[in-house]
Length: 360
Image (cartoon, rainbow, N blue to C red; front, side):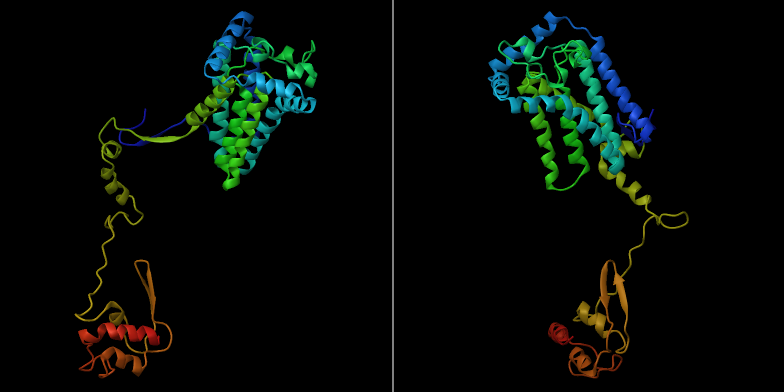
């Protein structure tokens, strides 16, 4: 329970841990994902019915691009094999590399981003469990299974990868979700305009999963959605507690009430000293004497001094003021400051300033 009048952090992220612990967390997360896909034996009719509903919705919205991309890839062996190996290997290589790079080079960003990946994968597992969906190669007539047709990574064999996964876990697409997470991690953890080129990775992944007949366009959109939810859930936020009287409640109602507390927390508010630094009074120039003339005219001619005044730097270093300069300041009168006639007339003050600046 947060204390009244204080700010508290709301986040589902946890900080960066040692390398062994992080590897164990990632391994446990992937093991949970694999176990859910293996343990949930969805019925074929239910998964195909859900896929048929998605297909009808996409056709009604004129978003049925799956057959066109699939036929384009299936008719070209080089394109088909490239897409097949990309689908089977890319997300198992790129995602761990991004995690390792974040842990080594961006430790401050690793915790929230790793947590976002775990949360997104957990949300996808919940959907796999509650709403199974068959891929287009099983639900849409005329679609070609690229991986089986070209025998990529042993697909289609009795002991191939198809026997180790849940074939009815197409919604959402974890390929797209993990690719979008990689792009978001690179964009968030780096600087420069070229970092946005990382978004080409999820775009290419979306085309591949659709062309290989493994996912609908709606599955790819759901993958982007779970990644966005994971990033939002792992993002740390600070909220004021307004349950009781105190600085937090006052600041929640009116931000200006927090200003005195912020000023009181300044370093110079030590015990026995005033909470506010007293303002320094600066002497005003005599009538008709500008600030520049006052600064130069009220010091001994041979004095050199540097100083600062609230961030402004001025210097009188260098050779002493000559008699010629003093005559300019005093309008041709006695150059000694204390002698009568040393005051500068109001009419000659601006002209003396300009002439002094041009000669200095």
